[in-house]
Image (cartoon, rainbow, N blue to C red; front, side, top):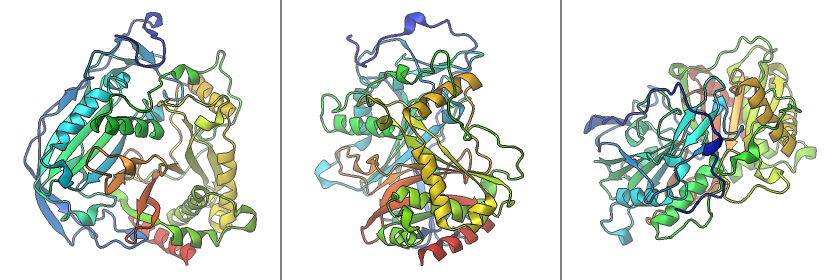
Length: 495
């Protein structure tokens, strides 16, 4: 078969693998479980109640979800068997995890009795012919911990399910956080989420109303948000009859290999522990979550606090500065505590020449703004906004190269999560346009605040309010006592 991906095979130059960890196994979960789906109060244009027991005591919608045995979906036709190195931006400890997306689709009478699970399964197999590394397994060189993809076509995990509930009856939980999320998401069941495990997981759950829910997980070492969106868009094209994706995938991870010799040319506080800290990360048990919507009215209110010299700042910069400041005030850290604000920045446009269209690997870095808690809480919003803008504007091609070199030199460290607030803007990735033939989803986005580090990481997702106005939805996770303070501070800024 002719090479499909636009990169040369590298299998002949790689050493023999040793010390592999136990392989992932597909295990059938119990079917027909009764779920108590806990509802939430009616949403306002600003905030939706979260997951605390007190807030979830009002409504219970019991229903059953029956999950078929999980399958492995391989590419529809033979694909090259080779080994592919990940880049040194892909290959960092902080990306060895799964990112999740949830899509909710209503009934479409034009599709008749067509089974959405069958359509999506077939589209997945077809698109994997082009994105065949995603059907492989990751191996790890020991002791260097360098990751490589074994393109063995073992396939991605897929579960078909049925729930005896209608979309209308669960309409109250169409915004995150989703109390019943576990029933609609494939449960990973393996010793290691990255090594020798499927790189993607799908579950398609049909509802009584002929609507359905699609959940998707992908290992972050394989692609960033734009790469995931590119893959899913290609999949929807195949579902609607395309013979090939409109944007062909590009591998070329060598574009972001560390230099030889590597040289770190920028400070990277996002990976450096800046002295002792008394602040601890939030634990899942002490956390509550709320979903906040920021539309035209809310953003106009926030911009009233922006100094004249920063009136040209982007919506992302203003919102991020506001949330960082309000969050710090609510958490009440030690005044001398060093607080970090980190943001995932897509760097494709920073390169000259620009990165090739179709590149779906990680092309992101995490610039960091730093302030003492005292300054962040006591100084006006313009102070935080200046720090956010300065950190974001510091990203250049050389900054990306420096990050890749740091990974090689320092053993692929995890970015610092203690006393950190990390944000990522996914509003432009068009998850709301993913159409498998039933039309666009009525909801699309990341379903929950980060599980690994609760309360640390937030995604900005495109959404609309009850009036149909476009805006940004953000899940905020905080300790229960702090949430009330956070809402109070935010409301002050919104007046």
